[in-house]
Image 1 (spheres, rainbow, N blue to C red):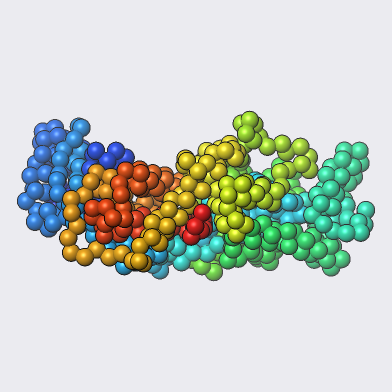
Image 2 (tube, helix red, strand yellow; image 1 turned 30 degrees about the horizontal axis):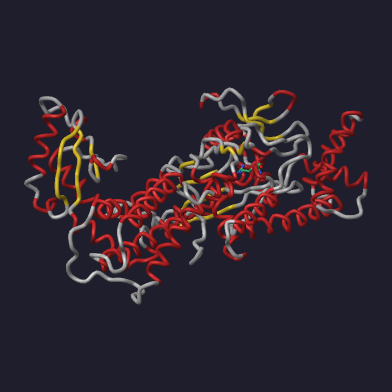
Length: 556
Ligand code: ARG
């Protein structure tokens, strides 16, 4: 929480006697800069209605000298809310702060000494990087950046799907067909073919299982084929990450945890929780957590499962990083899986209660008609094509090549992030590229507009000397937004909701654009102030978009 809010909360605690008094930012600016519900939950010693106790609290607040230095007005509203309006000087001072801190405005040290792990992107080897992993990559990166801005130590880990029975199938097919080249296309085809053949030949599934067992057993020939598949895929993925401008700290991948899993199976403290489930699999009972489906740790042939690998991963991460939070940026369809592994991790004692395990559970991308993207066997939409299409469309908006990449990719990212994480995203090129509405290009365009206003003056970084005249409603309203930026970053991080930052940035850009349309900046009254305001808006938009992983071209 920023200094200003801390001061107000301090005063509120004193005046109300409520130790855990909190402040909200009202959605409607008519209700002030901050609002508190302390009076609605004041201690039982208080008599009368919440409105009456709000009145008493306000009397005390109005006698609080320190508070009056920053607050202009305190009022009660509704059933007993207390609303605060900041002083104009405090609002204007934000501009000086932005000027001083530049790219650091909005950042804090709140998370110092604490580590957050973000498990994100995580595509599957031997499959194309589909649109299905796009959300995880984009949201995961935004969460990573948000926590970093709060001063946390952040570790990004790409939990590649590079292990499991499906590799048995693939290797088995490669052995049967012995293809000349190993491209992603070939691998994909082989995988589809496996399922076709397996319908006629029931022994094929057993063969595949046998193959995976050999892979886990360390058979060198099979391991070599597997490694070739991994190498091909990694090259392919690298192109997508390059296009997206995403770089993930680590990519251990599921295969990394082989020995960790062996150690777990051999560890009596863990083994005592494994029971024989249906058909001879080794399972962990989760009923104490209210989960009926037991977690399958080992299959009946002793090979490991996706869940076992996730548990081994938790064990490894806790040992290596001692994280405060592990965020899994993974789709909603894996909700049961994560409930299971979170519960199992507690039961097995892999992670202490001080560590939060979070599954963000994002929604799907849907086709423009609102239906699921066609997932007919072997037919997924290729992400690379979508990204290149976005860049092409950005060129059509009149941007040159280098700018078009930033605008096209920015459009894709912003469109994803502006939706709340849990909701589905209906793919819509028009909305995505719309220069007039809530879109990446619109925000980038607004930044470019502030740049071009400032470029017209000789002042590179305008400063505010001494006095500024009366401020109009538009100006005050922009200032009231700017001061909230640090708070919004914190809120967006804590609630795993980058869309809150998107809303904020869009709102700020709209305010600036309507101010721009109404008032003369250069050569107008209050020129110094207006230039500094323009600079402040540009800087905050830039800082926010950077956190969202979106570039801000100088010109558009
Ligand atoms: N590779 C998995 C998939 O595509 C996602 C992995 C998510 N992360 C995890 N720790 N399970 O479904």
